[in-house]
Image (cartoon, rainbow, N blue to C red; front, side, top):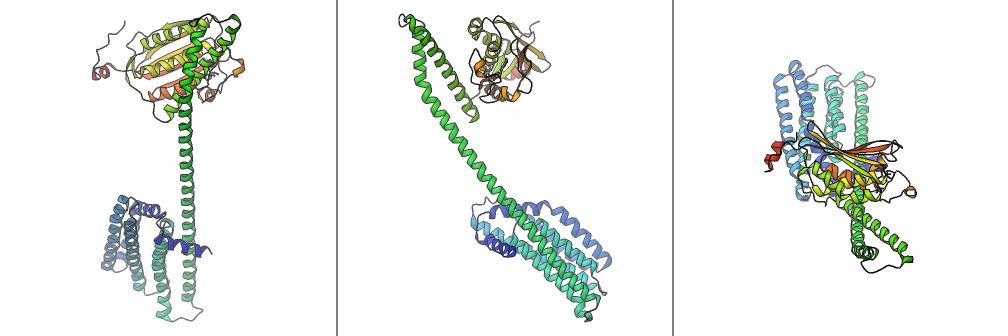
Length: 469
Ligand code: ADP
């Protein structure tokens, strides 16, 4: 049954182009990879044959077998260049593989049979062992194409039977002679080789099937991700435009620009304004995430002065800080602290770190932002005296839509996306983001970048930066 299945596969290898490219390529890659292994075996056999039998014949056979190797190498290059689409070329390569196989298997068999013929006494251990090794080698490494493997093994099989019959014909021994015993043993070995080949072939088939399944699964996942990202982008854009005008109107009304809001409506209007802002933040985060993941977020790298960046971020969040009554201090670095970065994206990261530090601190506490240099690196740290982060929460802190604390316990809302986006932005700068924290005592988030050297600045056409003493 299994044999019939293998035969059917052999037929489809020739007539069905599906999977043929993979088989041919796998076959040729392995054939070329093993060239030195094969050459070493041929050489060893040739040397032994030359020492113990006719050296001229041994050398001639070695040259013929090596010529078959050269043909395989040439074919390997041709199949490498083949794109798998040209089916005519595919059939041509397959025919050449068949020809090369027939040629090299015949050359090897003739070589080995000639050794057996030169042996005058029975018990052809040496040639039979050579043949067995060649057959096992083929079974192990040529299992990609059952038809080709069968061709090679058939030729070796003929050689096996020839050697087995050699002494039977020469000595015409009685059935109880050891020559007949050898003959039957060889038949058993032949069966063993055929069975092993089939096992290797079926193993290869299974691997091919699994690879196909994995490929299909991968395609499906890619397609689903594409749809998800398209959906997210469309929904976010469609929500953003009307929301912008709703938020703007609510802001105008809440600021009194549209006239006095009746006292009893003020709390409701304030809640509506706050929620419109939360929704706008969420949509902005979703759009950013989608852009980063689809590789559409453009980064404009330029030299950025880190002290200036930090000062700007602290300034931009000062309104939020005074609302939460948090005091922010800045400790700039003394040395030339410049990095290559996208200023607006880095501002986004800094604002996220600062607003988190404020959000998770109690009223009246301190937040310190420090810039330090360490050799060729520069570090920005944002330290708070807030609630802190429990151990083993890194995945949730930097995950998507994940928050360490429960949303019900928060005084200020969030999406759980900010640090995930920040991490991706930082990684695009080939920099790192991390934190240390103690539950109940506070957290320090830090970013580490490569410093821009003065020579880099000169290359970018910049003014040399004066060192701050
Ligand atoms: P969110 O929008 O919820 O702030 P982030 O991605 O910015 O989302 O942060 C993820 C989670 O990490 C927060 O919900 C919070 O639980 C925790 N976290 C971040 N920064 C701090 C901090 N400075 N102190 C305590 N917890 C923090």
